[in-house]
Length: 111
Length: 247
Image (spheres, helix red, strand yellow):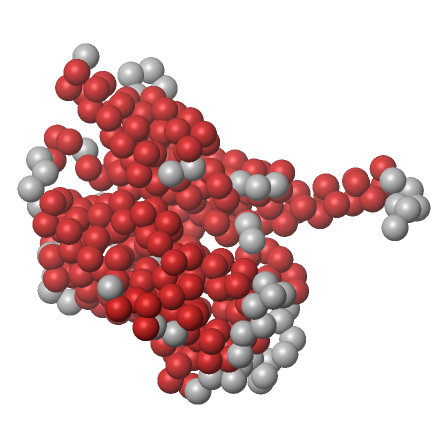
């Protein structure tokens, strides 16, 4: 749990992430005019950040929720697949959360 | 409402962003609830939303904090996730060129996927022809609306999340939010390959217990690399298939 970091640890991480994120956002907005050359190849590569990172966040939580790959009896994998189908057809955050959580609860408490 | 007396571009921005706010709200609720679930204090949870104000990186940071990852890894992971905003910053910068430095900083602080997407569409609308002040008004109407809804929903999530029993597995809402971001992000074949490699490497990182929870960062980097390679290979093979190209 996050409480184990000590009083300043979590705040340090929050501030550091905030400052660096602001730096990323402000970078070109402030420097435009001083750097005209945006490195094309770097910008091109950045378009792959969202699919790569979001998949890296999703896959372990569904496929290996306890640290090893589990298919049989893995309620999260099934809930994830149901939620994926809902996203695919409805493209709605709320519907995705409801479908995934409802499936998880059904498997956990209902069956 | 006194909405009628607001400048036209402010009204327009609020109207355009309204449907997106409905999508942002549950995301904000999860950010608040998951933070409490992971052991952050309510003040830290609000602080994260105000200081960072970038949902995907907040959720990843919360997830890692909840599993006692190294703080440096928490920060680095969030930064990798937010790197995509370099692209937005570069793309929108020419439109903010005439603004004073303080306005530029405010605009940068509220830069999000949604604010970028709506504003760039408005600015490139040939019929609009906005002057710098109108551009600022539109952008800030969108960005600040998102900010207000995000903060309110975080607080609501903190209040609700503190009352939900652990057995409900509320933390599972976090990957579900990422799932709803992932699927629309896969628009091309190279992006699908980036996602497959990113997800695969991250799972391998978990299974083989890569130290310091670096699996996510490694997955992200491997996925981006795979996407770039796939894009280059696919572009080359397309060119070879159509000799002369007819362009």
